[in-house]
Image 1 (cartoon, protein in one colour):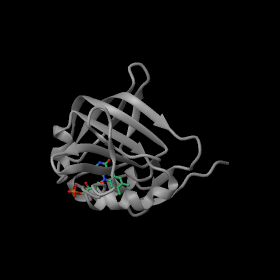
Image 2 (tube, protein in one colour):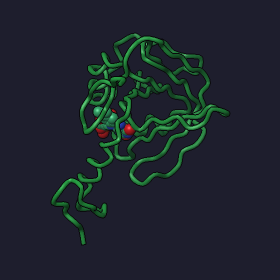
Image 3 (cartoon, helix red, strand yellow):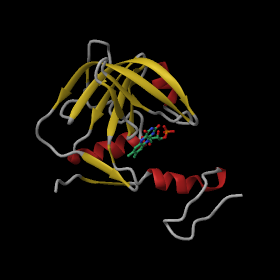
Image 4 (cartoon, rainbow, N blue to C red):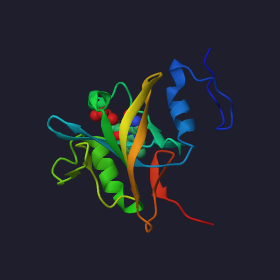
Amino acid sequence: MSLHPRASSDVFVPDESNTRLLRDAFGRFATGVTIVTAAAENGVAAITANSFSSVSLSPPLVLWSPDKKSRRFSYFEAATHYSVHVLSADQDDLCWAVAKDVYALNDRGLHLNAEGVPVLENCLARFECTKTAVYEGGDHVIMLGQVNRAQMREEGDPLAFFKGQMGRFTTR
Ligand SMILES: Cc1cc2nc3c(=O)[nH]c(=O)nc-3n(C[C@H](O)[C@H](O)[C@H](O)COP(=O)(O)O)c2cc1C
């Protein structure tokens, strides 16, 4: 039996009938926003992802989770290398462009790194990775990557994502 919360503080049991509620509850976790890129036969494959997380310092590992149902999943499944770009607050246009179109970065003249991955400049941080493991994660997979090279910028606010909306991080 599924429970339909009357108030936002009601407890619910996640099931097939209320995935929207679970999505909304997950959305209470404020995150940054990244763009992950990989080389594709027809140029740059890119995806906007907020599932990024740092994992380990030694060895240097990060993760992100692509949706198995995504039309662009096969690019990231096939890629041995990819690059994760942490977006700054003024990059929301890029975030939405990539969310809509896997090839949104094709005409932006991205440089290739040593492993042939197209990389963005001027992000808050960049993690150039070798894929080291893929774990089952329900309708997503968890991709673990070893960071071969990292880069960061001192100045700039992060693009923040909360309750389905973009915003800014402010310090107290
Ligand atoms: C802020 C934001 C975060 C997202 N995070 C993820 C993510 O972590 N993993 C994922 O597979 N898709 C994520 N998406 C969705 C993809 O960016 C993209 O919109 C989706 O793959 C489009 O569907 P398609 O690949 O079938 O064209 C996110 C989208 C937005 C706007």
